[in-house]
Length: 142
Image 1 (cartoon, rainbow, N blue to C red):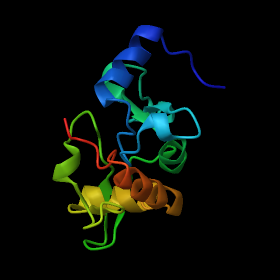
Image 2: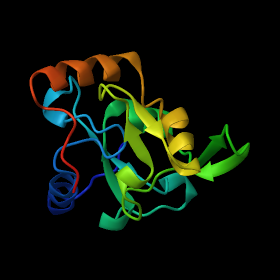
Image 3: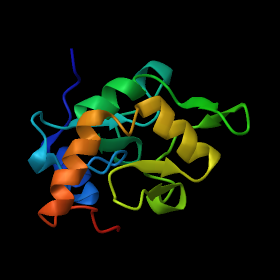
Image 4: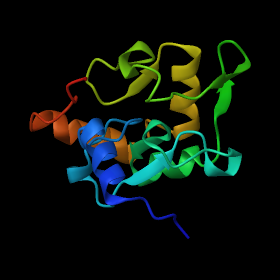
């Protein structure tokens, strides 16, 4: 059962994220499912329900992240912390492919996050392609 999150806090998280998943960058208004208020440090690991610990996430990113906070980076062959949208800047850890359909990790954190959250799921790649054609992708960065 999900925890109740106050409307004021929900609104703050949505406004701060500008209506896009803070991991895969898909806009909520093009998602077939409502977005989640994802605990960056999972509740299972004592993460609190505060503005600093919540991110707006699509259902897929939320499900793949689950209770993870780190994942293997294939280049360094070590575990790396997953991207934290409250403490890190997205485009310092990720880059778009030339056609803006895929996300590439440019740091250990970025690579681990791409792999763990499956940021290039076929549905996301297809949606990014369609959004690019109609001028709604990539999102403007903060």
